[in-house]
Image (cartoon, rainbow, N blue to C red; front, side, top):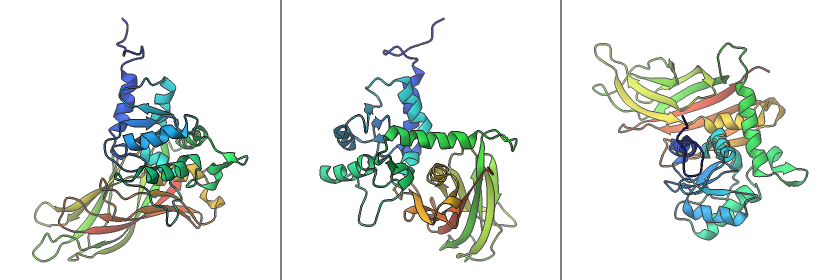
Length: 327
């Protein structure tokens, strides 16, 4: 029996793969200006963009950015596979926006055409924000396809090891819970807070700090990371001896910028201290400010300041460290 096919003669599920990717949280906003609900994509770069930024991408030429409509255009199998493998905006931006210098501002949804054009040309055509090893290739611009291939190859090679006996295991994540600030009151005048982190099926938690709305933990927790790692979820609770613990806020942490940047660089001990990526603050995440990914003394680290969600008040200070598989 023949399988159901689209009007273009490919299995109907092919274009659905791109639409499913578009529905992921970090792909719901334009990669270049954060406008909501993008419906266009650069197939060779691997990002979703809005209509206004799409026009700038087209002006770059298809050798720099091959623009396709998510809903209207015909996609080849290779184009679909490339988009899915890169993973979308967060993965690509952790590379293409690794080094946005002081004085250069990423445009917003209401930016002028001139502001978009300047930023997008710097980002993709001049590759001004890339790490140096990706930016230069024989003195010429590194084609987006080769940058994308580098991202995918690093992810693929790191995820291929089975020596630990865990399928798809790519490394470990060290989470240092530093402190909380202005946490919510859940008892008479105070709270007894602790933090739970969930990644996939794993759960780790801090100790309880008694009667303190500004607790200092300085505790390190460890999580194993597989290829399909998803979001790191945290929840703060008030410990109660006699009844169920009350929630004091939560947040999701996007690990893509940290892990993708770390894998793109390989062994961090080969590099001086430097910034290699960034998780950008937006109205769709819990960041208080942009969170840079840095190589510090041969280790890949990220400091994060979180505004707790679904609660009247509260902030957390965290520090992440990526620990790759032993070579």
